[in-house]
Amino acid sequence: MVMTLHDILEGATKFGASDIHLSEDQPPCLRVNGVLRSVQAPPMTHEMLVTCLKDIMPKSLEPKFNEKGGVDFGYQYNKALRYRVNAYMESQRMKIVLRTISLHIPTIEDLELPEILKRIAMQGRGLVLVTGATGSGKSTTLAAMIQYVNMVSAECIITIEDPIEFVYQNQKSIITQREVGMDLPDFNTGLVHALRQDPDIILIGEMRDTETMRVAIKAAETGHLVFSTLHTTNAVQTVERIITTFPEEERDLIREQIAFNLKSAISQRLMRRTGGKGRVAALEIMYVNTTIEKLIYENRIRDIPGVISGREDGMMLFDQALADLARAKKVEQEEAERYCDDLYAFRRFVKGIKASGEGGGIISGF
View 1 (cartoon, rainbow, N blue to C red):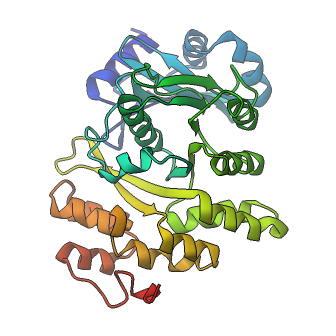
View 2 (view 1 turned 90 degrees about the vertical axis):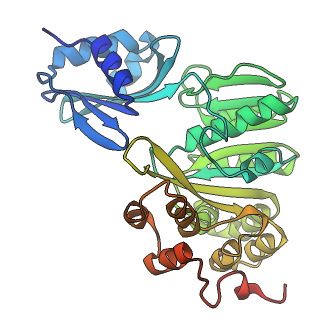
């Protein structure tokens, strides 16, 4: 019996898979609780992959796929599930990866995220970045923050995504969602348009290039709250990535703009929960208070972790967040140690011990 895409999606739903991998000459693979598992089924043929893609890809994207050998799009399977799809060619073989996106938008409480995210989401203006590796849950965290605003405040929210992932329903806010490749040619164009659409909040799916970063910073400067993502691993790398993306002659100006307009950088990693069922996020949170602002302005970016470790204003380092999860028995200590930045610092945090220099001593006297 030939396994259809319907069979694969139903099976993935049954096992709670976060991702589905379809490849020629291989059986389907599912990522369940962070672990890839092969489905006991015959290998998929080229014809099967072509049929799967025709069933789910908008016809308007066929020329792009044929020309560039890869395409991203969203696909809604039923009333409960939506997928972010990437289809691509590799050595003349087709591959399709589907990321599961629930139509139920999780709350900050559902995700067990720190309460400070509510305060960050309600900033009047500025730039808020959620960062991490691909698959670390950035989009889900952003969706929870946007949904919180939607539930408690009347705002005009515009999202620019590639593709649209979570689909919002207006509650107290008015939300417009535009998709790159369908409604817009690129993020930068969408951001320029958004500034003319009376926004309070703009969500940019990803800051991919210098011009998008430039317009995003300008939008933050002119009184808008801008959310976006970057593929960086911590707060220091986030600030440095933005600055070094620009030509050297512009970097001093950009650093000043970041100092005055960046409100928070939230970096996250996902790990398996204790017992292996489900995953939980550990977050490094940098909240730009006057001390952080001063360090960025003075180009003392490498001193930022010393401030974060003091845990003022809800801030925390990754290793502190991991220690919190380990002490709460939400993750095994061995699992947390696989993700920590500094093993010895992490073990101190688990025991509640501070080393000299932690807790803000590096900037004493400010």
